Length: 194
Image 1 (tube, one colour):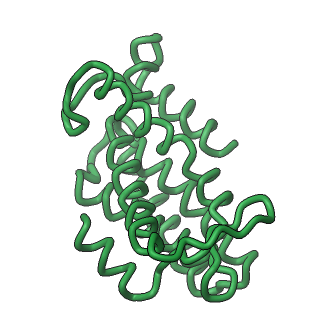
Image 2: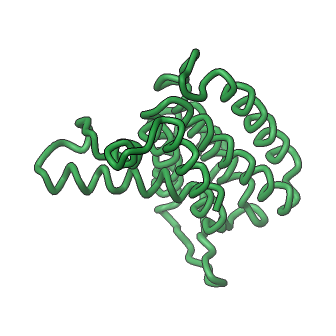
């Protein structure tokens, strides 16, 4: 993952300045590590949320559609078209991946969706050549980011490795609260869409 993220960053997908709430924060030497961290976060967030049938493909579809809208609004037609193509592909895949699933993304599929969304969000948020506004992509990916962050915190607080598996993800919690697999996919998708 790190090698792929470094390769993408080396091709020019870098955050040299972060723009939030009208303030520009130059990253300087931190541009490469922050850009790599962004890509690793999107890759692993969508991989970790892929714990139930139809969940990653539907969340990925919503995120891709959001990135397509952001890219188009910022005048990045190529990035918007690629994001719209990914959204269409995921929507077609979701027909067979919705519970009960007949086909599955697997780790490679969910990581690829995260990588493409992360790279497109990074590229489509560029204003000029050096500034990245992260508020749009962060809002679009809020649910997967929250789930991944809580998994890391939960594992650290219990003294386990952050790479260990557990049954504390948002989809596991919704199942414990009595939702069916279809119900949890709908609930998480509504939260992502909002």
